[in-house]
Image (tube, rainbow over all chains, first blue to last red; front, side):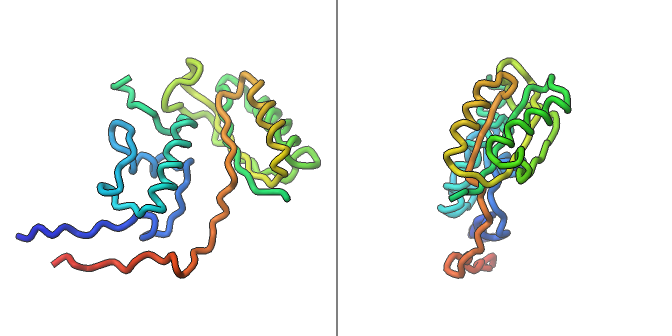
Length: 74
Length: 114
């Protein structure tokens, strides 16, 4: 019955994984159903990785690995 | 000084495998000596695009990794832009995975679930 939520940790620091703009599943995980990049407060990503992530998402969009806008909203 | 680069190219999906290979070969020779021998090529094959590009729904993805002089990229990218069967191309400095420095180690996880 307590409302302390678990402290979120940065997925990339935790698992020591590199951010790859070619990994569409990864990019998918960190964007919402409107294709927007999840804010740090939601994903728990650290500042450094959030910057890399945002760069990666934008590259992924350019390369049509993930969409800018989901199909049903186009 | 040469630097490591990575280029992702999306080709028109109507190209035959042999045509793709030929194009890659030609492009590689622009960034590496001996006809691009030292270029590591990874062709993903045909893939559905997340959104249509030039009204095309599919593309053939290829990833090239190589080391070259930055000055060689100008011509390399120019040639690709002129090719109408190249839907997209992106060249980035290849992220050589850096050895994490101790100062950058992640903070210990607080086990304050209770």
